[in-house]
Image (tube, rainbow, N blue to C red; front, side, top):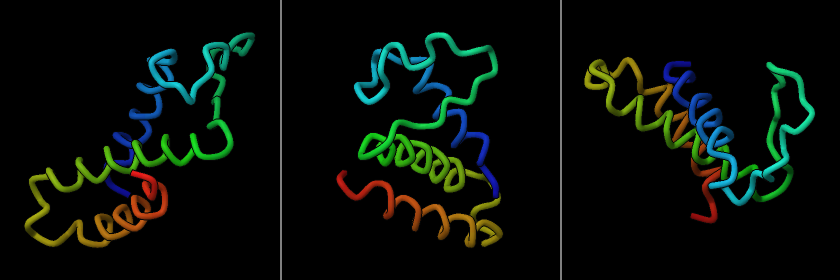
Length: 90
């Protein structure tokens, strides 16, 4: 899947921002070893975080230089479906 790195980087950026995101508790990584993969909080906040990741991925796909060739159509449709799933409340 193309642009997966951008999706995952959005999660990293959100977790690094920490206190700026109300769905990420300030002590979420407290006591965890370096390299810990935090996962996401349960419930509605998880949808918000995945929504942000898929929106970032969709933006990457739609701005790719090869988008006009149609080579990304399957990826774009998949990510659009995920946006519908996770971005319902927006």
